[in-house]
Image 1 (cartoon, helix red, strand yellow):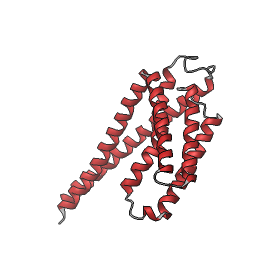
Image 2 (cartoon, helix red, strand yellow):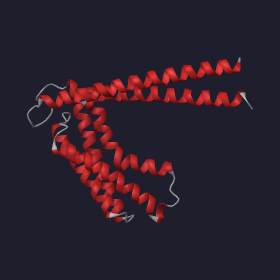
Image 3 (cartoon, rainbow, N blue to C red):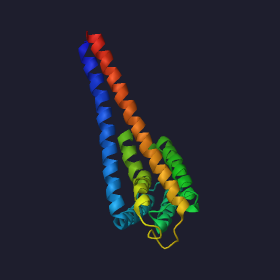
Image 4 (spheres, helix red, strand yellow):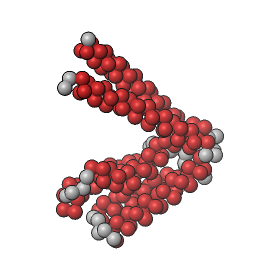
Length: 206
């Protein structure tokens, strides 16, 4: 077969382009919702943190998972909870942000060690592990990540009990701008790569 593999490769790269576009569109839509409903977003993140901490405790008591993994996970979510005091303003140099980032990295390391070494995880699939990591590690940081847009629209002094800090707003604005620029580069690269690949396919078929 000569034509079928070309069709498969073309469909695969087309799927990647469509997936990237859909993902970016969905993130943009969610960011718009977060920007409009900042207080509701704060409540959702608050409840999500509490639910994830409860799941950690259930895994410790019911499934007897390593206490080290549970401790780092709960510690990271405690820092996330403290960050809600100034939500949507997030200071990148604050103790809460740095502590949550460090514990997030350590949590990844200890959970990966658990999946690799624990006999109970010998037959765990990649999908199973990704689903576990999504709930236990990624969902709350992802919620804070998509909340960056709200930081640009909330009036100074309206974000929480602490006084407004202008440099955090500028920092988060730079992060959001870099994120959107990265998405634009990804779109451009994907489109150029796909079009060049199609040209090669047409040339080979001729």
